[in-house]
Length: 246
Image (cartoon, rainbow, N blue to C red; front, side, top):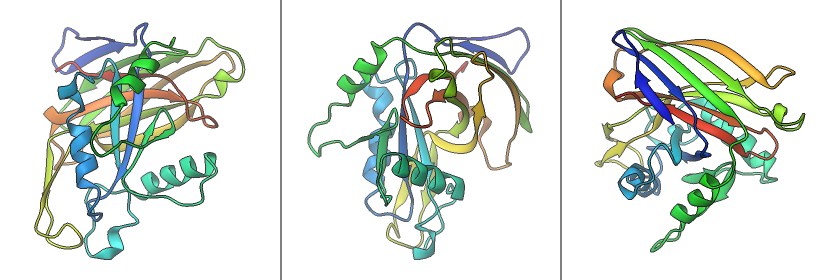
C-alpha cells in the first residue's frame, strides 16, 4: 500500500500494492459477555505485526442483543443483516457473537494458541485480483472520498462488489446495564458507516465518489477509511486498502 498526504491539509491518496490484504470481520456486541475478549484480541493484532498492509480488521456491532438490558451505541441493524447474509451464504441458519470471518470464511481461534498469522500470510502471498485507489479530503464536518477500483479478471470475478468502511479506533464505554454491567469496554476498528455493495461496470471498473458526514461525537483523528472488493457468493476478498495518512 502507498499512502501519502497531498499538498493541502486533510488530503490523502492511497493505492493498493502487489500484496493481497486480508479482511477480518468481527461481529460483536457490548450486550454480550463473551464478546470483550474477542474485541481485545482484534485490538492487539497490530502489536503482533498484523498491520494494515497485511490485514484490515473491521468490527461490526450487531443490534440483536440490544433488547437484553443495554443498547450498544455502535450497533446498527444493517450489520446484523450483513452477518445473516454471510451465514446464509455458508448454509448456516443462525448467527452468533462473537464471530470472526477471515476473507468471508469462519475463523475460530483456540483459547491458548491461534494460527491467524499463518492464515493471513497465506492470503498475503496470493495474487490480488483487484486494484484500489482512494483519495480523500477531510474537513471538520465531513470526509469526501473518491474510489477507483479495477478488477481485470473474467466475468466471474467482475461479479465482485465494492464496500467502503469508515471506522473509528480508541473507543471506550462504561456499561451500566446488561451482561457487561459495571465494565468499561474498549474497542478499535469500529465501523461507523458502511457503503455498499457497489457494482462494477461491464469492464470490471468502478469510479465512485462518496461523502461521509461526521457525527459530533466521532473523533476525527481516530477515523479511517478503507475499501475492499468482495465476491458475494464465495465471500473471498480480492483486495483491500486502508487510506491511512496519519
